[in-house]
Image 1: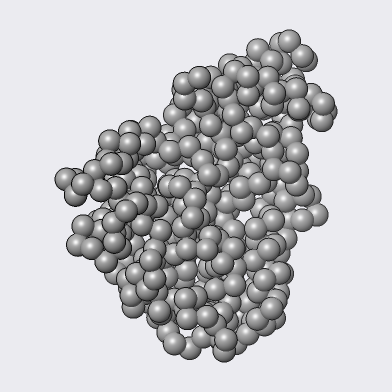
Image 2 (image 1 turned 180 degrees about the horizontal axis):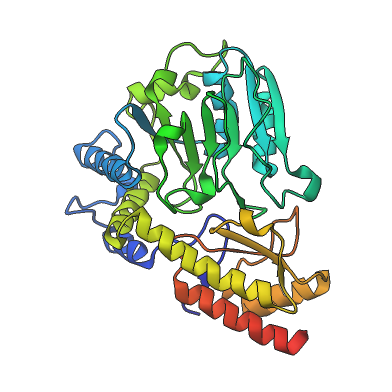
Length: 360
């Protein structure tokens, strides 16, 4: 079997050009006689890799000079604790709960102070983004937290919430580098790279410098202090070297593609192909309120569990893999990140039409 169309939500599809480059350098990176997997993170050659990766990332996202970029381990789940430990000076934070990961972050924050759920879409299985234009933001909240794109439920904040002057903290894992963003509107944004940027095992965090201080909650582990990591240039301990190297390749690929404005156009075009079909289908239907649909994650159902299973199995046999929805919601989900080509989405829709004709 050749390459499949991989619709996994993460770890997810990577650009083929990048995979080929990595394969070519696997045994010998630039004449060093060794793989990046084998080299010291303190070496001159790796220093060049991490510096170039950060520079390209900054250029892509237009990161302002007063923000640090950190390459962190522990996944998004570690940040659910690190954020309150570093930022909850008044021991109060407001959370907008639009899915499982925002809910987990909210539950974790309760361990460190008062976490207020100021908006939620739990009442309709997180199938929409609540109105965040006039929120009951707490007077002494240290920050307002969102998960900007909800991987499981396929929703996306199209407009950032009005935080009434409070710092905005965002988990952007599944929409990272999929479109241009104004970084200055966030105090901190972070994302696991395994969805849209690289292999699993790393988070990239973009943090406004004034938030990086020694004033953290008592008992904060040294490795979880943003100041420790920022002062050491993400090299306080051995980082995920191979992941940083791969992400660096993806940043070069994104720049070669034309940057984030071009990616946004491509992603809108791909998503429209799938959503337009779902809106006209007799068998399949999308589960998200139209105005809140994600460009990255597209959940859909037939309305019949057995038919859903039949579809997932038939799709797998045809080389469309990882279409099963998250175990908490069932149904199907197609994740169509940056590296998913338009042809992949077109081929999926053609297969869905055929399946519908045979089963509707």
